[in-house]
Image 1 (tube, rainbow, N blue to C red):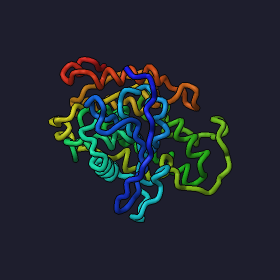
Image 2: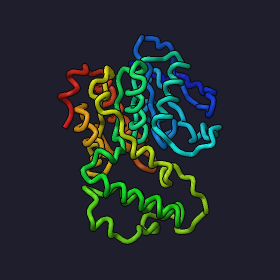
Image 3: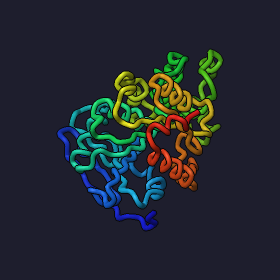
Image 4: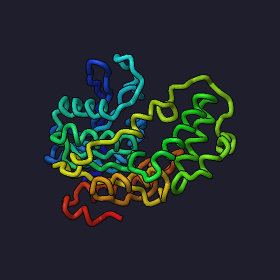
Amino acid sequence: MATTQPEMTTSTLELPDVDLVHDVRGPIPTADGRPPLLMIGQPMCADGFEALAREFPDRTVVTYDPRGLGRSATRRDGRHDQHPQDQAADLHALVEHLGAGPVDVFASSGGAVTALEWAVAHPQDLATVVAHEPPSLWALPDADAAVRATERVSTAYAEKGFGHGMAEFIRMSGWQGEYSDDYLALPPADPAQFGLPTGDDGSRDDPLLSDRSTAVTSSRPDLDALRSSPVHIVIGVGEETGDAVTARTARGVAEATGLPLVVFPSHHGGFARADGPWPGKPVEFGARLREVLDDDPAASRDTGL
């Protein structure tokens, strides 16, 4: 396997309503004929995949900033919502622009929701999709209570700003098990307990804490299309995520679709750099992802929980 990191080039794809900034590490067409590997997130941008991309020096890796976020922040459609279907269309356009398909995809969190919509809308673009912990609330037995829990986040953010919204999000996303009546009766989360600011800077455009994320968590793909898809799709779950909401949604999506569930090292962001604010295990995570990408599709159904 190659150890020298390939040169990265950054370009912009101009679409009618947004300019998508993307990074390509390695050649397209690829030198060895293997599909390029796209790494996508939501609301995380390309920089969140730097550590994981380094674990694939022998692959051409493509990352991008989704519409309305990061370097692709400027939109010309007058909208601020984040619909997975729109992002799937953007990725289809990006793959066609690069002449890169079919591609392998590692998709994290909201990016995993987008990847499932992409597999339904444009299966010809895709070879293997690893959808890691999609926050698909519809797949939970306590879906209604989960929606109420997320509404507490957006309400706290709308009324009191970032610190209060993020404190509520940390508590909600780390809660183990179903959202009980006891959880929903808890007093507002205290940002000071999490080292967060208690003041209000007046901004209300955070893509994670505002109601802009509602389209991501509520998006329900065509389950029949996923079940019969020609794309090799697996659902990923972190071994350390436990029974937090994104582990439960991952299991729920896998159960609803019959897609294989594959365990990855670490947590929801387990591919992040080890010395970062939310330390991951990118070396171990990358090794597991390589196994899944190289696996025979039929054999992968024996690797889940």
